[in-house]
Length: 99
Image (cartoon, rainbow, N blue to C red; front, side):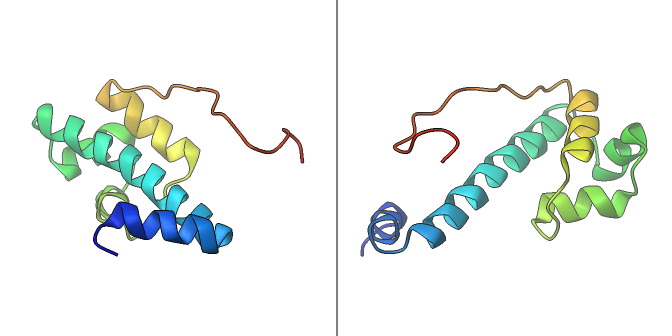
């Protein structure tokens, strides 16, 4: 396999459970990446962002480093201070919803 995309395709075809884990990790990476990019654009340090959110500095540091998975409440606090929002969008599914 030459690329990450090739590997993901192989996993999706051969191990759907691991494929779900990869998809979840990539989605979280996109969310945290947007958070980091916005914090940098606003020229805020991790410590400054944490203070604005009423969180310990270590929480922001762990989220940004991937050592901790934030809960929705924490993400909402952070995104509010960064002027970001979440968008809910339907995705096509091969299975019938609810099954």
